[in-house]
Length: 373
Image (cartoon, rainbow, N blue to C red):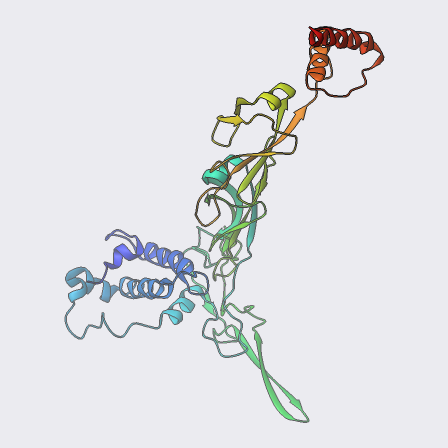
């Protein structure tokens, strides 16, 4: 069963003509096939046009309000609708469907915004709202550029087409070219009474709040596109797009390599030799890590699933700890004695420093004496 026309345009049944036109302009910009790349965009675009064609016509609207989609045969709800692209041109005063060489529909400038997130947000994804300046449709004149109570008039030079033809004679014959009309600058209309809010341009500078969804796994420098959230062109048309460039802050502990996170893990001589169980930071909080005995500087220890997810879904990477064994530099006499005894116990050939030579000899004699018993 066909959808309710008021529902399609997001309107109440007591709405006025201005609200109907405003809703059509807003939705048609979003779902125009040149802007929206969703598979169902063209069907949605035609549905919006059909709803507007009925509700903007007083006679058709009266019949629809009375009979709904079951209007008397011959009234023409199912047939006789204007071409949606021609309807779009009429409302927006643009050149869609114009002959070859005519100016196309105006398109607003694209905007770019830089959003900085931390590494934790990459793991989970985030939603946030940002406010940015944007050129939007003038609310006073509804984007027409004409003072309320007046309407733009058809350009007397181009007859409303927005372009003019010029003929040029050459030795090969007469060539015809088309270009923007110099009188209306391609709009097809001229404004006798410009809107005081926008000086006839149809657009004003405003602050726009945009909700941005950053997916998990996004990488530094990647962009997110928001269709139709860019500048609105002066004189009507379709808005540009908003590109949000994501910047990921450097983390004080982790370094990212694709899905894996790397960090340096400092261990003492004793921890490396004997093994240990230590607490290490992760993106999700602290985790316990088992240090195997005899681990060496440069060895890599792994926490599976503690890395980052891929951009389009899938299992998370790993967290990899690269070991660095720290050599003590501030030994006292007792600690040096213990290490010298350990060296002798392990039959290590070392040459002690001047300050440890006498101590080393005494320890050696003690070991020799103990071995001779």
